[in-house]
Image (cartoon, rainbow, N blue to C red):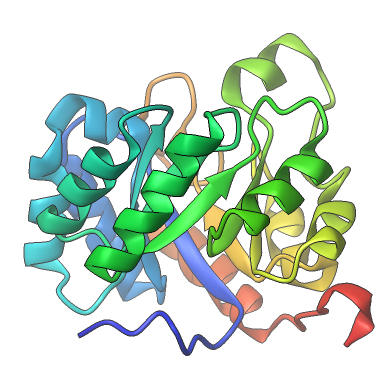
Length: 237
């Protein structure tokens, strides 16, 4: 059984933002070989393949935690339950969802033994949103600048408010949204020990396909550096 109650940080997660399960499995295998810790069934993959994507990842990688990035906005208990039954260890609920939805996802997480990530994408005050989601019982915070938002407003980065978000909560944080390789490696030092690798590092952002570059070599380099990176907890402790 996968234990997410006693984690050793930093942790590296690959976001499989692909639209084909065979390509996702191939990319995941490369990632696992390179030392990646967690596998994320990205939103495009879940839309294209549904629960089948989580089931196939669980079958192929029984020892690796699987994050289902469903971005739940309503029907919280049912969606979390479905992902848990398919083999997910972590589900994602949006901070812009109603309080009732977040509470229901958290309830399902407790009932089915899975963890909950609360995503602050689109929140007007991302720091307050993170603090609020923690008060409702989520286990992790995703500090997120969205794909479309970054395309519309040049220069946005989750690094900008990362330390403020990490310092506002007592649960682990991850930064998502167009990170460069140096930024990804630096995340633990800025209070975010859950490091997500996706577009544009290993996924082509405009095609939702595996990068044409040697992602195995890239993943090995980044993952090794992140695992060696010092994790600076908020407040310096």
